[in-house]
Every structure is written in C-alpha cells, then in structure tokens.
Image (cartoon, rainbow, N blue to C red; front, side, top):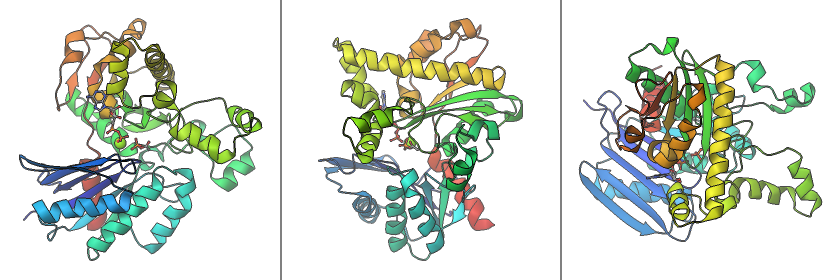
Length: 394
Ligand SMILES: Nc1ncnc2c1ncn2[C@@H]1O[C@H](COP(=O)(O)OP(=O)(O)O)[C@@H](O)[C@H]1O
Ligand SMILES: CC(=O)OP(=O)(O)O
Ligand SMILES: [Mg+2]
C-alpha cells in the first residue's frame, strides 16, 4: 500500500513541493509556487501528465501554502492518506545536527535561529505552521540544510576570531544546501559506478542561492556558505564573500546595520551588479551587448573558479566536478567558461555534451579529461522523503 509523504521546500521566494512515497519513487504530484511576495506570483501543480497553472499574488508563505493545499483539494490527489510531512529547514544552528520530529519546542528554537537565516527560517516556520493546521494528526519532520555539514573538520568551520566570542555565540561555519550536496555527491558516485567512499568530489549547487562543497569519501570537508547563507559564491541577490571591513565602511556613510544587511542579501549578487537576478535574463542581456551583465557573469565565474581551485587543494586532488540546481543544471553558458578555464588542471569540456539537455545525470567532459565533469539534477524532495521516513520509523 502506498504511504505518501508530503514534502515542502520553502525557499526565500518559492515553495517547491511533492507528494511522494520514497519506496515507490515516482511522485504522485509535483508543484512550485514562485515569486512569493512580489506583485504577481505563479503556482504550477502537476499530477501525472496534467498540469494546472495560476498566476496571482501570494503575499507570503502562509498564503502560498494555502494555495498549495487548494490545488490538492481542487485537482487531487487527496491528502487523506498522507502519513507524514517533511519540511526543508534551512538553519539548524548548533542545536540540530540531524532531522527531528517537530514539536512546539522545536518551533521555538527555529524562531530563535531566524536571525541567522532571515530569508529562509521565517518562511520555513510559516510553512510548518500552515501545514500543521491542514494535517494536524500526522508527524511533521524538519530536515536541515546544515546537517550534512555538521561533520566539517574544526579547521574548516572555525572563523579566526576571538575564541570566547565564537564559542558563546555559536559563531562558526554551518554550511547550507546540505540535503542537495549529499544527494548529488551520492548520485554522482552511482553514475560513475564507483563507491562514494573512494571519490573526491566538488559539488557546485548553483540555484538562486548558490554554494559549493568539497566531499571526500562521502563526507563533507568544506563548503562556501558560512554562519549564514550569505557567504561564498555570487548569487541571484546575495553578494557572497566581501571584505568584512565593508560593513563598517558603509555604516560610516550613513547606512544602518539593517540597511547593510538588506543591501548584501537582497540588492547584491547578479541583481545588484547588472539588474538581472535570473541567469536566463543575464544571458539574454549579454547577447544583446549589455556590458554590466557580461562583467557580472565574469565575476560569478571568477569566484566559482577560485573556490574550485581552493577545494582541489583542500581535497588533495579531485575525481569529479558536479554541477546541480537551476543554474548548474541548465546554464551551459556558465558551465563552459568555468570548465574551460580549469583546462590546465586536467579538465576538458565536451562542448556538444555541455549543450545537450536532459533530466538525467550526464557527463560533459571528454574521455581524455583527467577530472570527470557531470551535471546531476538535484532532488531535495526525494532525499527529504527518505529522511522523513527514517525519522517516523525510528
Ligand atoms: N533554463 C535555465 N537557464 C539558465 N538558468 C536557469 C534556467 N532555469 C533556471 N535557471 C536559474 O536557476 C535559478 C533557480 O534555481 P533553483 O535551484 O530553483 O533556486 P532556488 O531553489 O534557490 O530558488 C533561477 O533564478 C535562474 O537563475
Ligand atoms: C540556503 C539557501 O540559500 O537556499 P536557497 O538557495 O533555496 O535560497
Ligand atoms: Mg533551492
């Protein structure tokens, strides 16, 4: 008998969801709400080969979850048989190093952690509360982005600041997108037909938020996001790495600390540099001769290459470089300059394979390439379903 689990992946501006029995595999329903909080949002709900679509405003995540529930009520499948709900939860802090059953104490702690992930924890909590109202009698499970990185070695997670302050306030690198980095590194090993224990892998999770990880034998040894999901790579609206001295410099010019935070989280990255946060729009702008868009992409690629080089050093070599998430899976014009600029380190791009499109894992390096370069579609919801099942059967 099918035991469907509802998975909710509340992102900063979107909710991805699936109704899925991990033992069956193929989802019974898949959907996404996008552009939450903007003037017009969209929701797409797929059941089998039927697709239902609406465009209207979604003021916040509570309203968006209500719209998801209405899609199930109006178009099915029924949520009556749901045995559990799995929630992507971005920041687990030092408290949560693995998935947990959600109760009021867990929710209180997530509220406390909201300052560390202001774009993510509040939507996640809104999703949990809304889903608990609709499905009050089934277990709800929190699956943490930070869990996969809880095993980082101390030299990778420690910031070189005063020890007592760091310890008292829990200031350290936590890392995010862990469910995806873990899933994708295992899938890559499966694709290569090699035990994950034998592989040194670098995973580039390039979505609207973006992070990169170094995975040695299936264990994460470094990652680019830090105390918060702001550190590291250039993102859609986030700056990634900047000089820590920038905050004071900007505040001296009259900005408040909240304005600095908003600038770096929401008005920076690709959007800040060129006005386009979506790689499709950046690409179109470059093709029409937009110099700022070209520079923004150059900065994006430069940052990514710097991290890849650094992680090759950290790992002492690399067997596979893997691209995933919205940009990583789709943007051939981003992957190409990255791999081509790594030529001297043993990477060789198969230009035609890079342009091909597929929802399956695939290789985009030539047979001569010393490092295998792969595109592996992520599936955070499938990995979350497995986690949810593990927690409720404990
Ligand atoms: N066909 C495409 N070509 C290039 N970039 C794409 C394409 N589809 C999606 N993207 C990029 O992927 C991003 C969304 O990625 P996703 O992994 O869904 O992000 P998130 O989970 O952070 O919302 C978009 O903002 C856009 O930049
Ligand atoms: C942690 C994070 O940045 O998530 P997302 O990519 O969904 O914004
Ligand atoms: Mg995402």
